[in-house]
Every structure is written in structure tokens, then in C-alpha cells.
Image (cartoon, rainbow, N blue to C red):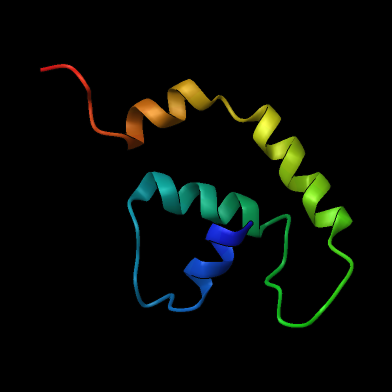
Length: 68
């Protein structure tokens, strides 16, 4: 949630397509934090997102290979 919020500070800058895809997915469920609000619902959405995301597949396409 903090990373996505940080990306919002300057949307003129773009990341890789895969990170932008995850950003869009999160933003479709958790709105930009522009004022204080109760965050428990947002945290629960992020918890479910983290549990449901197929991390090995996502990370292998984002991170550099460790094979030489």
C-alpha cells in the first residue's frame, strides 16, 4: 500500500509494465489516500491481494535472473 501511494506522488514517472499492472490492480480496489481515514478495510484488501497473487510467476517476470 505504501509503495503504490508513493508511486502516486509523481505519475509522470512510469515503472515496468508488470509493476504498472499490479499498481492498477491495487488502485482498482484501494483508493488514493488523500485524507485520514480508517485503514482496516484497505489493509484487509491488501492482505487478500497478497495471499491470492501468484508470487512466483509475478516475481520471475519482474526480478532479474540469478542464473549466470
